[in-house]
Length: 74
Image (cartoon, rainbow, N blue to C red):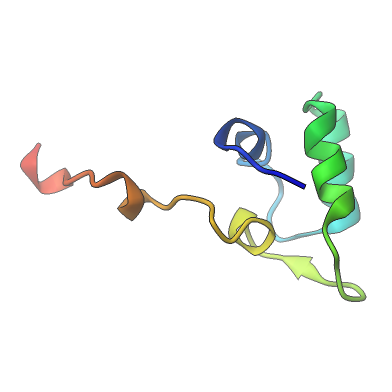
């Protein structure tokens, strides 16, 4: 399983919170690449686990702080 920003972007508008099956269904319905569906299928989940955001699936997902953007300058 591997994630990239491009692959994770297909889940940015997903209906969070969601279960693994709901995310797989969303990815298929929205036409996400097969890699997104395969990555979601490879996620090990506990019974009836609900994911609150992409960070629950991919802990290394970059946050706004990672881009060193200072909004106060603009």
